[in-house]
Image: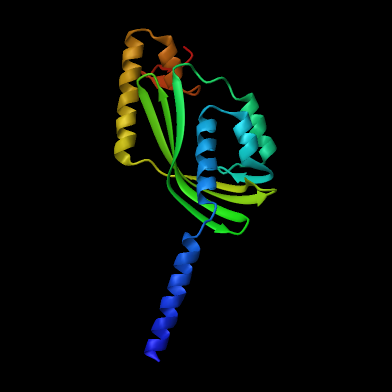
Length: 199
């Protein structure tokens, strides 16, 4: 009896392992994902149009649920990237499970924004459901979850921003100050006087 149960358990484990590791279109899906991430860094409308299905349901990390039409509108109305700014996206720990013409692609997204001497890196867990229609894979559902920053990284970034702000203030570098400050910024000075970012 024990041997029969052991054989059944081993067979079940092997079938699950083989099924979860079998993704015949893994290379194609991985290439599509990497091409999309490269295009997204350039705000490439054609790549967004190719990647997202017309019936897409996208839930972003801020809790906003949007359609493909919403994404395309955002892409077309996005401001031109600042010359000194470079955005790159990459995928780590990519996992693909394929079920015939449906595939689940889960990965850790690394978003890197470089502007002048400042680099900001965020991480997200993304999961997309891809559907193959007429021989073409497209995303029909997407879920993004922003991961918390490690405390050491947050501290380092805050200290770097504080240093940039101090130098920009001393040099009267208005461009850097505008880049750093939010519209709601209020600086309370030693005497209690409050100064807005615009001032």
